[in-house]
Length: 269
Image: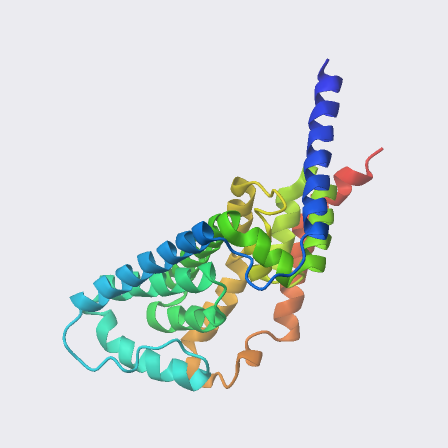
C-alpha cells in the first residue's frame, strides 16, 4: 500500500514537471507578456515600497539629501557612507528601515547593485550587525521576488531565460529527494545567478520552505565576505577586489560539502 502511494506521488511530481516543461517550450517571446491584472499587482508592490521610503524621508530632519542615490561605483559608495555616518547614531531606526526597504526593493525587482548595499552595511554597522542585516534583507527580498514571480514571473522568465529555465527544471526534478542540499549548493556557489534562482524557483515548483531555508543559510558566507570588506572600505578599489581565488574556492568547498549527503544517498545500492 505504501509502495503504491509512493508511486502515485512520484508520478504526480513527474507529471507536474512535464507540464511545466511543456509550458516553457510552447511559450514564445511576446511584445508585452503581462496582463493588466499582473501589471496592477506589480504596481501595487512598487507603490508599497514608495510609501515606505516616503515615510522614512518625512521623519528625517530638513537637510540636503541629494547624496541619497543607489551607489553604482566605489566612489558613490564612499560619498553615501560619509553622509549616512552622520545620521546612523541619531536616527538609527530610520536608517535601518530605509536601508532594508531599499535592499528588499532591489532584490524584489532584480535591480543590480546589492553588493554595494552589503558593503555599506559593514561600513556602517560592523561585521555581526552587518551580516545579520544583510542576510535578513536579502532573504526578505528574495522571498518577495519569489512570491511576485509566482504572480507574474512565468511569462517574463519564459521570454528572458527559456533555456536556462529548462535546465533548472531538469535539475530540480532529478533532486527532489535532496532538494534542500541542491538549493544550498546553488546559493553558496555562482553556478546560477541569485536573481534567476529567486524568479525561477516558484515556476519550477521549489517549495517555499526549502527556498527560504536555503536562502537564509546559504547567503551567510558570501554576506560575511562582503560585509567584512565593507569595514575596510577605504582600501577597496573595485568590486573585483572582493572575491579573490581563495574566497571563491572556499565558497565552492562549502557548496560541495552541502551537496555531498545527496550524492552519497544517491549512490547507495
